[in-house]
Amino acid sequence: MHNIKLKDVKNELVELFKIQSPSKKEDAMQIYLLDKLCELGINAWMDKKGNILGVKGDVADGEFVPCMVAHMDTVFEFEENIFINFEYEKKLDDYKIYATTKSKGKDYFTGCGFDDKNGIWIALKMLEKYPKIKVVFTVEEETGGAGAEAVNMEFFSNVGYCIQCDRRGNSDLVTSIMGDICSQEFLDVITPEMQQFGYKEVMGMFTDVEVFSSKNIGVSCVNMSCGYHNPHTDKEYTMFSQLINTLNFVDALIEKLGEKQYPHDTFVESTRKGRYYNHYGSWDDDFDWEFEAYNAIPNSGSCMCSNSLIDASCQIHNPRVSNMSGVMCQCGEELSSHRDSLNCDYCGKVYLYI
Image: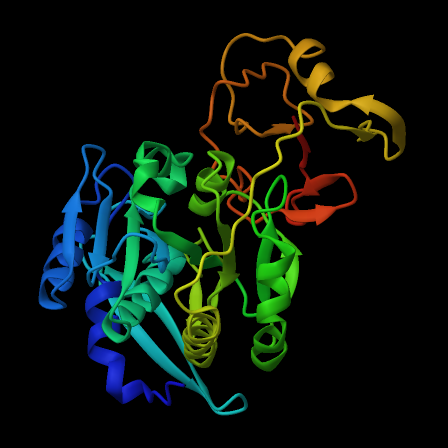
């Protein structure tokens, strides 16, 4: 377990958090990570899409190793200056980390992309420690997962399981994203660690491991909270103790799971029938979401719906358009699970599965 004090890692956190890497402009982060992996003696390369893949140690035939996953891009555009602040909160005995920028002599809150720089930092820490481990750093997660879609699935042939740290808060272990992404055996093994570090099993929404699972990666995957809050907004922040708790949780999982494969075959449901929120605050039973989403709404033009969710108020839905960032509403707030839909508690939009 890591008993890390802020002073021990402050400089490396500042260095990482200050790197600006908007979607499709991840160059600075790619250079940073390739240099880091080289320092760690990891065999790393960048694929044609810009994803960085790495292998540490000699993995023999029949061996299985853990794989860490994180995405390099953020939703924020370039700022001329970014400052990383560490504010001590006495009541919590903890440090709140947030970013600011300066304009015309005034300081303003801004986002630096703790989603998913927290996940990157944790992945690097695991790469430092374990002699045999793999890693995937993706591009363009925030614009629909194009990076993850481009990863060669043969890379996972000797992977035992995948861990991603790409969720807000400090207690969610995502085991289902439009279907289970890990096996019951996997969950049974790690239940003591979940209880020890205060995590609970939840259903989540889009991230890279969901893409891998949907392509039938064949092994168990999870995504988890890693201490950031208010993602995709200028007032995002990270609680240091929560970041360290996630680091220790991941470490404990790898220690427990070891170099073993935890198989999981993705089950893809062709149609989903359920209850449909009908705009008037009531629910209609036996509504075929998939059929209605593709046929009842004009399939022309373009909109901000994702390719797996539809904005219930959208009138020009095109299921091939994927401009909305997975778990986020168009307004920038994270969607919450509400019966058979996902709702934005901030602006009130309702999103349905297709």
